[in-house]
Length: 298
Image (cartoon, rainbow, N blue to C red):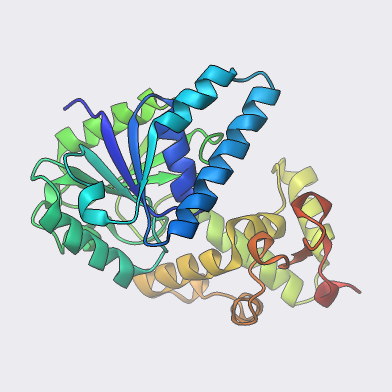
């Protein structure tokens, strides 16, 4: 199967990043969202990112324009998936929302269309269960920021076919990514390892073992991490971290995956990290000017 036309569902951070990546690689991309404003913001974001690439001589102006020309936006899902070879869902990390979307996709997409999901933790097998094409449902977990990060976790559900897996592995390589095939389990590989580490860093802070900057510095200088776990949690979104931990806690039925009280409280207070302007750090003056949030200052 030669994939040429792709629909991305969801114009948020991951959705617009995935759309950017496919469009820059020459694919015809239909970016769909229920909100016209979200689509407008997505195109603005993609344009700014492309402008940054031009300023750094990574691409030329013609490549930028060609990338933007490859993207069409749409608020109507049915027309957005008509005749496409691949759909990638990048909606909110909520199992009910994803099941609803895939049930609808199964009805309106061509029978040969592959249905992918960018879920970072939810079972591919469960998502596939609401369709009549379980062999054609697969996970494509891109990393943020999508245009820069090389990894794609390619997750097989229990009934995902070898041929579909092979197509998606090769497709990922065609995007300039490095795909890694994994089997279905809560959190897959990346978040099964990452989220408990982030949660443990929060517990270390919660128990007053050390401060925000100190914990991050230990992991940066001592473990060669490019970003400390608390800063990374802010970057990912504390609500996203909480959702993934809850999926893993429920999926494994193991208390070691239970999210910390501090994380739960911060999300309930709307302190979600960079996107809300405050998390473990304060981003009120912009993401590049972070300082420790007042609630954690000693």
